[in-house]
Amino acid sequence: MRIAGVDIGGTSIKLGIFNQEGTTLEFIEYDTNSEQGGRSIIQHIIEKIEQFGAVDAIGVSTAGQVDNKRGIIVQGSANIPDTSGLQVKAMLEDHFTIPVAVENDVNAAALGENHFGVGKNLENFLFLTYGTGIGGAIVTDSEIFYGKSGFAGEFGHMITHGSGRQCGCGLLGCYETYASTTALVREAKKINPAYLNGKIIFEKYHDGDEEIKTVVHHWVDEIVIGLSSLIHIFNPPTIVIGGGIMEQEIIVQMISKQVKKNVLGSFSDVDIMKATLGNKAGMLGALSLHL
Ligand SMILES: [Zn+2]
Image 1 (cartoon, rainbow, N blue to C red):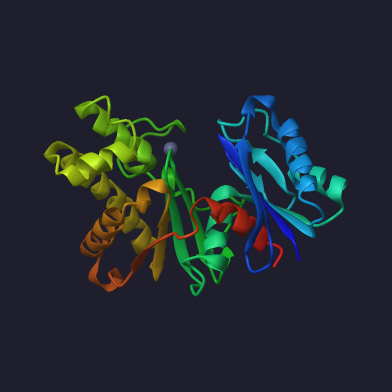
Image 2: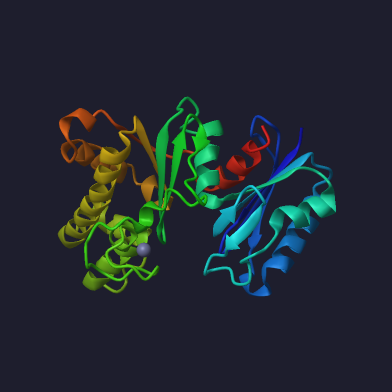
């Protein structure tokens, strides 16, 4: 069986052909060119898949709010204009006449980890990705918990600071305005405008720069505040954390240690684990919908 996995993001589109064990047979990554609009993005995806030969099914992971039953992007991401209402499933099925599944990118990444990554032997876990914002997914009995309209798990907009900073969503004090990678960089730039990204920040951190250490430790505190609330609500056995910044092993260790001190004793036996599939999680999760 050959399944195409597609991950539509704001800056790039990743497209691979995989077998059902998740082994990569073909892979390309190319610029989204988001200004071209949704229909054109799908047309390009069709052309790329055709270049790789026949496939049996297609799984699509995409930014934005997704109606996964109908395979429609209900509310497109601000980074990819003109995708709200895009009928991804219908467009691809009309062309290829094979099964197509569409899932929100964070849910897809969680499913990817569940089928092929760190969550392989886990049935229940919370999944969070730290990047520009914070994405979340709830996996229960190896399935996504969707909530009434399919949008459950928006942990980034859990309010951790009442009347706090304004979030991009319009609310005040959302978790992601304090604990995302964007928030870390914002605070680091107050020390030095050249501290533009996680890579530079952690170079300084490992050099022993005390100012940047303080910023990083404060940011870890913010991560832990959110996780502690989630642990008290869900009592999960495991939390899987991902996003490029979590490649810093020391961060995962700090979070894990601090979380245990910040929850009620009976909740402290929670495992904090690092996601392992990196930027392939979305594609693999999307194709897992056909397995
Ligand atoms: Zn928000």
